[in-house]
Length: 165
Image 1: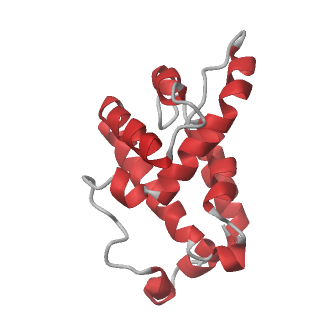
Image 2 (image 1 turned 120 degrees about the vertical axis):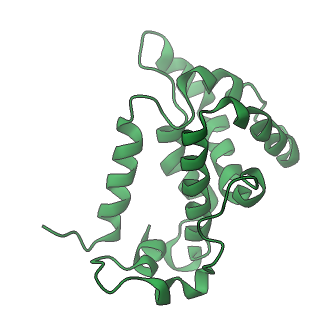
């Protein structure tokens, strides 16, 4: 059956990210990513993220670029969908940057959760600059024109997904 509900699509995306055997930011990079202080400045966080990107497999980096640029576009409609960078980071961060399941990791994950969420928030806000060396799949589409670029064969229009995600 077809799903016309944008929340359904969002749920499937979160499930897909959560079920990946290796998250988009690999397990081995959890500690390096979360080693920055929660009180670090915005600029320090951006610099920290950029310094670690070369350690992420290229296919993961491209997927992160696409995802965070998309989430940035979703925030352009936050007056309608209430999905601010903070809200989206709370929803998506645990599925992108997580620890491998195992003894003792639950406490580490809880302790690192504020940093993980802040990193995701900054990656949403700064997606264009953080991923500047990767082609932007949305470069030719402004948020205001996204509804005119949706396909008529699609059961969920791009504008509906962006505004309801």
